[in-house]
Structure formats: structure tokens, C-alpha cells
Length: 446
Image (spheres, rainbow, N blue to C red):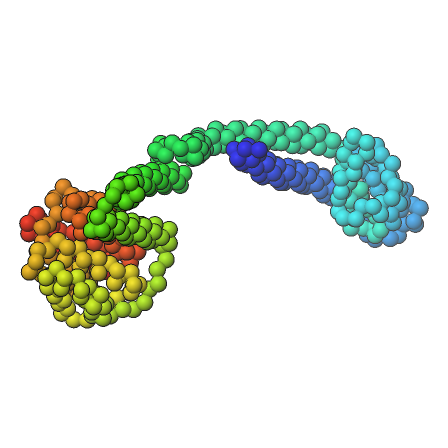
């Protein structure tokens, strides 16, 4: 059963029950009111007839009469004062009956009045004791079938009206719900399209309600999925391209070793080239695995770190490279700062930035690592990065100067890894560079 059908049936059921309860309450109240009017009318008639009956003699007169004479006299006067529809009761026994019914079992009348069903008739029975003589009561028996039938017809009308209102409300609800669920159907179709490979599928957002917010979230998700797939395609394409060079080199030199008579010096050079290509492939695969692992695992091990100790560790791990390239590494720290982060990842980040600065610097140059506030800056005076390449340098396998990067053993993954490390720490990384003037990379912690 579809969601729309379930909701419509549920709403119809709730409306029907609610309307039925309202109808039952209204009918009960109407019956109670109608009966109270009938009872009050009979009470008034009994009061009027009772005043007339009290004029037929005093208490002393009745007390001076014998029982037979008194009963006969009361029957006579009862017939004069009370018209049809009344009966005179003495000690629970009817002694004068002016109703159309046989009076039996008066003990069944527990209260002042009741409504008794006789076939299809409804009879209102109401009794009242006489003030004197003692032991006498007047019983009124009035046929209220017409009023009762009218109430039953009104009850049927109420049920019909309430049922019609419930049905109309359910139909209106179904129409409104169908309009509201149209967006959900579009979401389902778009999700099905994405599952079939149409990653750019989106839904049309209408209004600002919760369903519209779900639609907006779905569109953002679709864009991110499409972007991730595009990045993956670019990553795989770049990986295939980058792997082609070392693989071609390995195949070429190994084929020469197998097919061509080479001197020992040439053999050694070929083996060195094969080894270099293998090392480059190993470094590239290690960095690629690290990058993929960071995207799959959002959790990092955070601990409170001293920035001074962290940068000192970076200085120790990069000591060999600046010396080998005749580049000076200078670290400036105005005051120590405590940060929350993963020591190994942050150390890897700054080591990579220092390596990049050293590789970009000319012999005799300088790489400066400074910290001010919550920002750490790595700055060099090297060749710089062209402005058109700056937006892309954090993309995997992107190299502004491919020939220089390859000659330096680069893979184009360092800044992509660094960017991801900074994101995992909730910080930002800003890269400023000018060709011929150098590059400044600023990492700001939250």
C-alpha cells in the first residue's frame, strides 16, 4: 500500500471517529434536552391538576371518612381533576386508570420518571406523590413516540452530514497530500536516476517547507556525489598518466638489458634508472594510499601539542635536505602556542611544505618557518608558481612545472595531502605566490 493511501485512510478514519463521537454526543444532548422539556411540561400539568385536586377537601375531611368512602370519593374527584393519561396509585396498586395502558409492576419505576418502550412506541412515565391523603400517587403516561422518531431522524441526518464532511475532508486532504508528495516522487525518481548512473540528476525545489529542505539537501548531495566521481575520474586518469612514464622507463631499460649488448657502465646506468622509476612508483603509491585513507577515515587522534616542539621536530626531520641543496632553514616563533591535533599528520604537513620550499629555492636561498598567533607560515624566495596554476596546486597529481617536479622526484600529491590534513584539523591553508619572487603557505588553526 502506498504512503498516500495509508495517510488518506488514516485521516479518514480519524475524521470519521471524531465526527461520529461528535454526532453521538450531540444526539445524546439533544435527546436529553428534548426529554427534559417533555418532563418539565408533564410536571407543570401535574402541578396545575394537583392544585385543583387539593380543593376537593381538607386533610380533616379525609380523616373523618371511612376508607371505602374515601377511596370512592378520591376516584370520583381524580376523574374530574385529571384528564386522560393519568392513573391514581394507592400503596403501589392502581385504583384509577385513565391511561390507554395497563399499569403493572410499578416497582420498575425507580426514579421520578423513565421512558419505556412498548413495541414501536416510547412512553414517558412520571409519578408524583399527593400531599394528602398519605399513600397516594399520580402516575402520568404520555406517548412521546413522535418526538422520539423526530430525534432519530435528526440523528440519521447528523450522521449523514458528519460522514459527508469526513469524506469531503479526506478527499481534500488526498488532493493536498498528492501535491505535497509530488516532490517526494520526484526525489524517488532522481534517486533512481542516480543509482542508474545519471549523477547530475536534481529535483525542482518548491517553497520553503521541510520537503523543500529535503530537496535542497538532495541536490547538494547530488552535486557532491557528482563532484567526487569527477575527482575520482581525474585522479584515476592522472594516476594512469603518471604511472605511464616510470612504467615505460622500466620496460625500455629492461628490454635493453635483455636484448642489447651493453657495457658494464651502461648496464649499471640502466639498472639505476629502473631503480629510480621503481622508487618513484613506490613513493607515489604510498602517498596515494595515504590520501585515500584520509578521505575514508574522518577521525584523527587529537592531543594537545606544543607548537615549539612540533616545529623543532620538523627542523630535525628536514635538516638533511636544506644542507644538501645549500639552503638555509630558519624557524621563528614569537611565543609558544598549544594546539589540538595529530602530531604525526601535522609534522608530515610541515615537513612536506619545507621540502617544497627547499626544492623551489636556488642554492644559497632561505626557507623561513614562522608562527604568529594561530597561523604558521612557510615561506621561500624560490621560482614561484604561475597565477593560473595557484587554484589547482592542491589537486592530486597537479604539477605547475612537470619537468622540474619529476626531476626533483615529485608526484603532485604533497599539497593534496597537506590540504586534507588541514581540513581534518578544522583549519585553513592559504597559498600566495608570484613567479620569480617565491611562495608563502599559511596554515591557520581554529
